[in-house]
Length: 289
Image 1: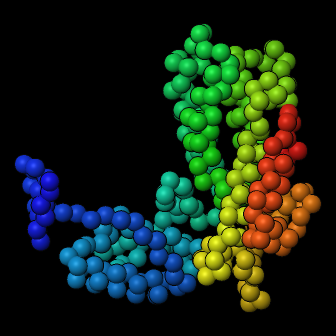
Image 2 (image 1 turned 30 degrees about the vertical axis):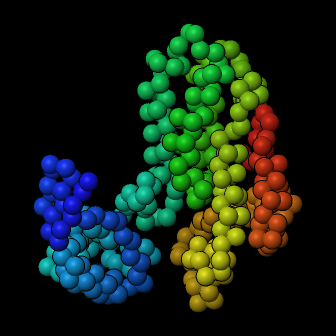
């Protein structure tokens, strides 16, 4: 039984008189002046409810050079808010260059950490067969690596590193060494596993079809289906491959254009899923690498 009053709460013999409410929020603004105004309004509205904004934990991340690189902090409501190049939100690293290399490196490091923690208890265990170890590898290691992979934009180097993690992990599980001369194709066939890039591609195409089924007013649906404005000018330097361009390339390899796949996912989602499954369940060497 619990009893609550306007200033305290009690659970059995425990009484809590100081209540804290915590929550993460992300605010997008086109200019620094709009952002400062929104933060001031947020602070004023929070004080009316008896809440306080933790300015120490608040960070500002500026894209497209809207802030001078020499600016390290911005004053808001008498507090200095740090301007940072990257931060962790919902378990993923977000950086100013908008690339996924730091996040992929972070995921690879954590996945290797899980592999090391299972070394003596599972991988080196003599009474567990190889198939049993693969069953442990799939639910304990791969989810750590694939967290947030639906939004990754991968370069050739990142694809090679991800596939290398998969093959090196399986070699470690089965006790293979380079002197054994076991090819990656033979290793994947023996373990009945797919390459890491194949699995990442499946997650990304499933996300594309999932967002296509959203309502037109949904923000995620609007972001993916929106077209570039004529007034938009790309930044200087070599253009990066966007996530949509990456998905479009894989859809063309499946014999579908982006518009055709979008319509199929909306009108015939089961058929779209079957095509994605057929294209991403490669046996042996994956053609998507």
